[in-house]
Amino acid sequence: MIELTGWEPLGISVDWAAVEQELGVPLPADYKELYEAFGGGVFGDSVYFLGRDEGLGTFDFLRQWRADLSVDRDAGFGAVSAVAPYAIYTPGGKGLVEWGSTEWADEYFWLLDAERPGDHPILARSNDVGGWNRYDMSTSEFLYRVLAEADFRPFGIAQYDLGATFEPGSGGLSGDGPTEPSVP
Image (cartoon, rainbow, N blue to C red; front, side, top):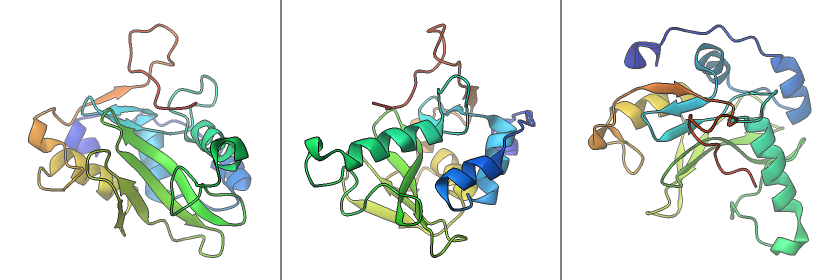
């Protein structure tokens, strides 16, 4: 990803142990490396990459997960999960945690399972195609294919010639940077 984007790694320090303690499962090692190099932000002007932007909340996957979990558990929204036939991950269980999305409302999740802590398949759904797609690959490989392979259907954005750029999250305070992904 660094070579693809020409990005200079930031070397962000994150207390991953605290994050993983809250979730009750380890996160993919390559995802943690990606976040430490890039931080949260936008790839190719359209792919939102969530990380651990604790202070501001922008592009913060834990904040997104907590919001998704709250909605998934709220009976006021009905008995069906927004990620049916799955559910949002609850510590000790099995479910989805969102780590990315696009401006076209495509969504990228890990399917986490407390009983299989080293397994991190990616489940993704496209707003215009519908249904879930499972990818047994690393977060880095998935993201690379989304950015670089036009035939990575339905998620490849290389066909739109947007470039493999990265724009770090602005914190959402000034209004000049990318906007925050969908956190209710």
